[in-house]
Image 1 (tube, helix red, strand yellow):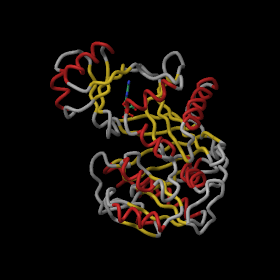
Image 2 (cartoon, rainbow, N blue to C red):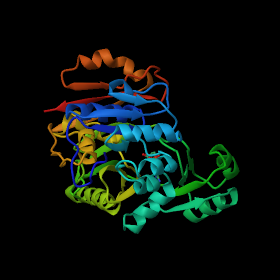
Image 3 (cartoon, rainbow, N blue to C red):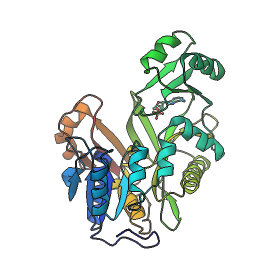
Length: 361
Ligand code: AMP
């Protein structure tokens, strides 16, 4: 039976989750705390999410029979990664509520569509141009000027599929290195800080943003998020406005994270979006009355949103990448730290193995 959009799913119901990574795992744990069951759909052999869930369908995202059976077994469907193939969403959406919906997935899967979406809402971004060929690429770099950043329009994450261009030389090599595929060229933003806003919106259209933290990246991967981020009230208000307007424009039910640059003039620019819980919101697990994962569960199940007040005067989330997770013994001995490990087998370099939330009451 499908879930009527005006009614909530009662505890005991089953949330279907596309994707089996750590975001799905932490969502499943939050769902379990509210009495829901999670059913994971993921093709990989190892699934941190399936380890803590009631059921797992291990099948490919184009396996129509498996997707149909999965939809029959669950009450509502969500996802923990934005690259859910459009065809998969098309199969599932008529069968059970898919939250957030296919429109947000479509926008979030392509950097050009994201930038167009933001600009159409009057949300500022770095100047940008698309390049579908090597000659387009040279023209785009000339139009944007150097320094600039070239990124693949699809499938890039954690700094992968990107190149910084300081001079308009060797563009052929950069084009080849990034795979000879469509690129977006973005003006280099001389930011003073990076931040992100995570907005939640429920089935009745009520929206709420989590407090905005300061993000620090290392090698293109998020390293820390700190709350409070030291931003003034006007900057924070801009960020909340960007989050709320993004959520409303797509009639969001669920979460959306917008990554932001804070310019020298205090103006916030949107970089990219993710229609799901986000690494920069992991601090909420121990630092907020409602975690981002619980908020996501509440929204997709049709429950009212929970309060988002911080529970500590300062909290810092640090990612544990690759071998850093081997430091777990000393972290569990710290008095003001909460360790979160994802149950992944192999600590490959660059792989997110866990995180730690350190808090100051
Ligand atoms: P992204 O994959 O778009 O999230 O980019 C990863 C990181 O690269 C960002 O968090 C920034 O630190 C940096 N970066 C991306 N785009 C730009 C830009 N247009 N100007 C300056 N730095 C950028």
